[in-house]
Image 1 (cartoon, rainbow over the protein chains, first blue to last red):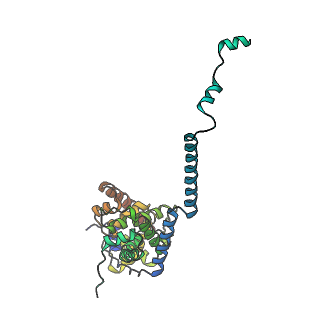
Image 2: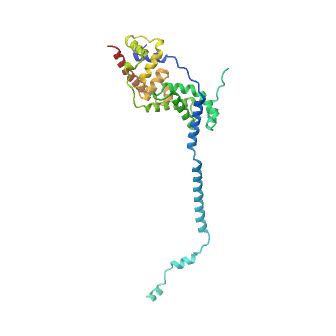
Image 3: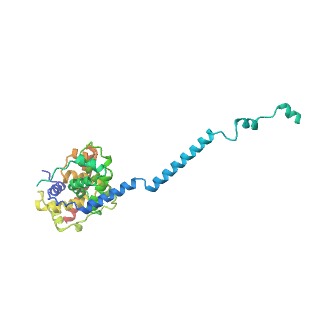
Length: 98
Length: 195
């Protein structure tokens, strides 16, 4: 048997009778569950944030739809008019003008 | 009449799904275990019930992280120990106890240790426990934990390894160093006793 004072002290402390365990009271249960509910709510997006996200998604979809519609439909600017606009003048006609 | 045995895995599943009755059942089942751990590692400036509450809140907010690889009680033990360690780590000031800070019973224990080589009497148990708690208050969280588990709760190195997640070698090294620190402090108190 070790006679080191610390060993003797620790052995004596380990042999001390256990304190009685308290009953789990309803108040503690309720406080824990309320804290857990609050933590779960904080983890979820709030309703306002959900509305904002939905609004953003709808705005994006509308923008994409508008662009696709504009590209797909015949417009006032036809292929022919584009060519006319950007066509270079004939060299002879240009020289005649000089 | 005996209480019916709780089906812990089924209860954990229901608690995970947000069933509060299952959470209450688990709390009642785990309460003695959590109280024991909290009492063994209670920081000086934290109330026992506050820490028990903090442990349970952590358990139920992180219950999705429980994979079922170990019994639920082991997982809860680890959560409880870590919660206590974090709380103790926040305590920056570690008091240096002097002889004048000890109660009469604790002084008697120191006197017995200094003057005799025999075992302390069973009547000294509570005072010894209080004196050990004072000596533990000088140690950091990990040292305090390893001494509590090995010497006060008489757990094996393997059990401490499972609770803390440390390697066996680390458990032994920490226990050795923590004992050296406690021995030095106890010697200081014993020297104060002998003129």
